[in-house]
Length: 315
Image (cartoon, rainbow, N blue to C red; front, side, top):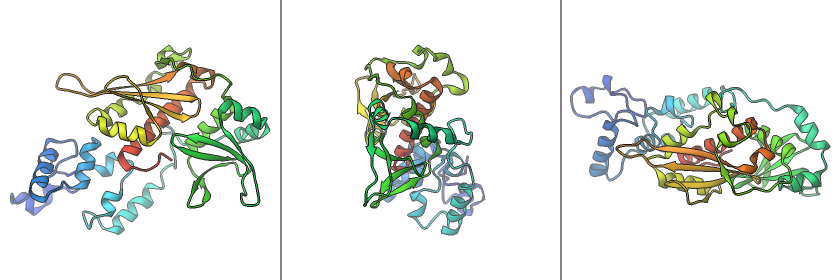
């Protein structure tokens, strides 16, 4: 297939038609591997766009990567102009800001904010292992500080929003999925501590929920990391994960303080395809219903893959 990972169609290029240049092919193709080998041999390095697409198993950036256009396109003079990249960013922002793992637009019920404001702050902090953040002369906000992955968010109870600390200020974080799951966690976390007993979703009382459209995104994890265990380890560690002795590579990740989620990856070989599992601490059902546990695990998977592809924080 002559269309390269970057989107250039070599079918209509005179260089390719005259035999002076070969197509890079899609990022998942044999042609891509051959092209990168030639580039490293002749130029000392492979095209960063093609290398990224191959590493992340993306055939074409424009259609297969939700992070297009990324810095790989910004840093070079080609294949696209700044005008084209600006248009792509603008048009892509017209999509729903933060869809659910199933693609639906997320809305956060205002009643959740009302309920959390009515709770005893000390009890919420103790149950959810979060911290009370008080207003002062130098701080205009009041709320709860919640550790999320390797970062901290401020649940602004008066402003009814999440905030992240950046460049000396608590800036509003527009991430509806995280906002919804954070409020659900704060409202439902109980006194129980993690048991350190790892279970599969089917072992939970509501295990039937994790089927069909609510199956955990293990295929996406296996696809991204089955041939890149080092990338998996680096991304998991970067979002606060702790390595555990399971599978070929495995990490315990904390989306929220009392909700450990375990990611296990087995590398593929000539006989078997890569595999992945997503597991929970058995205490998860004491804090969250199945739909919320599924949402948290899906958020963790999305954050892990985003960190590997872009190097950016998950939210």
